[in-house]
Structures are given as structure tokens and as C-alpha cells.
Image (cartoon, rainbow, N blue to C red; front, top):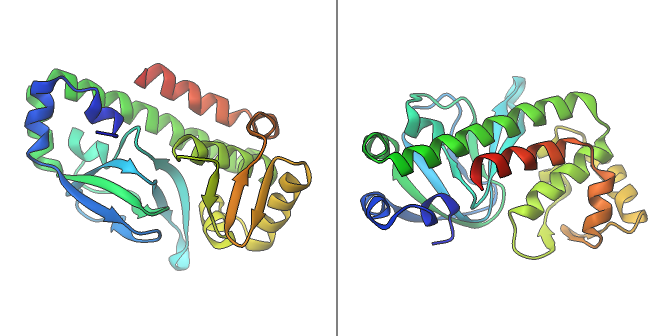
Length: 227
């Protein structure tokens, strides 16, 4: 079991949840649930990343947070939310375990360990979303890109990421030329290598220095809630 929430459950509590789980494959760019739709499912990520995208006018979207194997997309629907406020889209190929939100909510009401795990992750995710909003309004694109790459790296196996300019542009809410300039700056500094949709993190420590303080703040939220 690669998902952190599920892996940490006591055996008896996990057995109750296991009966609900359906393993699904995620394809990069695939929409799992749309914004404004009824909150029907919870997705426990095993590999890959699910982006939470806020809708904008004229069909635009921007990432407000993302979930890897440390958590579950749709966690708030397991805690009582009835409607999704953001779209769930696979940022990369991967695997998730899908559970019916209503049934999971019933189990959480009876299982203190599950309820505590879901609440802890919901708090950490809320902190991430709030900090990302502040970051998007306060910091330069190079800093934001460095912060975002560090967060993706934390949720990915290996140092090479399959990321096109189009994907990064959507996630950061900036133009593709803006992504090109920012990525070029990080590459010239020897922090990353980027070519034809493949980005390799060369100097992790240097990338942390290039990022704004938001990366450290979000990481602290996760340590306090999940460790």
C-alpha cells in the first residue's frame, strides 16, 4: 500500500476501507471529477499527482493545489462536503484507489483513526491551497516555478519529470513564454535541465534556495499534520 493515509491505518480500520477501494489508472490531463459536480468519490493516490484546478472565465483553469500519495483528492467529501469547488485532473500518469464518498464517510464516523487521518490531511491541504493563493499574488514567476517543482518532486519517484510548457503554464497560471523564461533562468543557474518536455532536477538544494518561502511554509504544514 503506497498511499500514506491508508498505509498508516490499523489493520481492522483498513479492512473496512479496503472493501470500498477500486484501483483506477490515471492518464495525464484526464478529468476525474468536475468543479461544481456532486462530491461522489475520494481518490487515494498511489502514484502520480492529482491537480486541484479552480475554474476561470472563458473556460480557463489554474491549479490551486495538488495531491500525491501522501493524501486523497476529495478528502472533504468524506468529511461532509456535498459539492466539489475545484476540478480534479490527473497532472501525470498514475494510479489511484477510488472510494465512494458517502460510504467512506460512514466508516469514518465509526473509525477514529480514519477520521483523524482524513482531518489531518484536509488541514494540510487547506494550508497548501491558502499558501499557493498567496504565492501566486506575491512572488515572481521564477520563485513560483521553483516552489512548484519542489512540491512535484516531493510527490514523484526520481529526479526527472515529464512536464510540457503547456502543463506548467496551466498549473502556474502564466503564459507559455513566461514559463520559457523562468525555466531558462533556472537552467542557466544549473538547477534544472529542461528539453522536449523532460525536466530533470539537477541541484535540489539550489532549487530550494531559488524558491520563495512558500515551499517551506507548506512543507511545515504537512509535517505538523501528517508526521
